[in-house]
Image 1 (tube, rainbow, N blue to C red):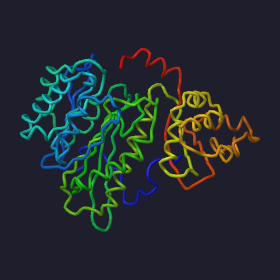
Image 2 (tube, rainbow, N blue to C red; image 1 turned 45 degrees about the horizontal axis):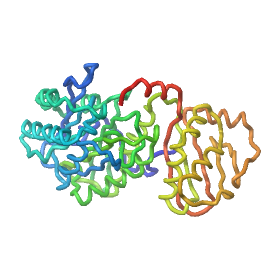
Image 3 (cartoon, helix red, strand yellow; image 1 turned 60 degrees about the vertical axis):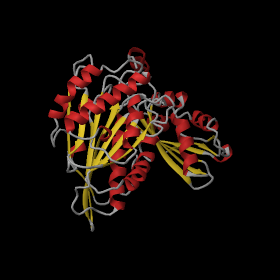
Image 4 (cartoon, rainbow, N blue to C red; image 1 turned 135 degrees about the vertical axis):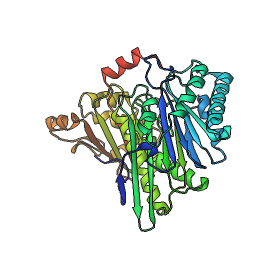
Length: 404
């Protein structure tokens, strides 16, 4: 199975998540937004000036916190991120934006920073007004909870249907120096990112001015969070926020920082898919021979979005016809007569038609927890890898009973 950057030179995994990099504190508390009483309000704060870059959902139905965060991050600087679970503050009209602004203002006052230096993220139920009194009532405790080892409390507080904390950090070293990149994410359902995952915060002590940090984050997100799907359902609240404190005394080269960002995003994206709601099996869709990488990605996404393909994956069925049918409806031009498909190492289709293969061997390969699906279009040099999951009765049951 191949996922994430091939080049991980100089990277060493270390504990600490969003507080692994120097200059950051985090914390998480229960503010009463979740009926369960579990932690639901997190803060990640930089001890000093920090640069920022964000990517937010391309969904036309965009949540108020995404709108506010884009606005506050426009100048390339931020000092803190406030994240609440239990309520998405999406489809809440002007009042939702006012509530997000009030959250930022309250956190800014507690931290002693300008209001537009605070970014706001939310996740949870759509279409219900944010319980602002509970958020504002919890913020003083959340700020008091900020510590240099509070990463796990923060990562826990942003969970909704997640079954596990998702965090990772790497130190990267080269001849020029070293820095740390760490992050946390949440997400287990409603995952068809058109930019990011449900929510993610990445921190680094590398000195990265906004014109450098923005494209660096976009590139890392494009090859990780933008290439995963659990249910082909894009969220209203997707957001990835990066903060750079610049406290590394002798940073590495930008190429090394890029490797670390790519690894952090890839690991967190994988953790999201691994924790997919009601899923049992993951598929790595490797498309090659396309006219461009962009077209390969579009073709892979079409397969990942196919309910029929994902149902076949759940049943361990090497039904390659569903793969070709999904690609044929993607709007990308290719020659079906040149396509070959291999499932778990077993070639099941050659030149667009069935080939002789051992069905028992193919079924065994398709029944493993992780399956490689190789799709060769026999054309150009474009290639992409996409990560998706099966569609199970458990997923349907879970989402039939869970209000989003």
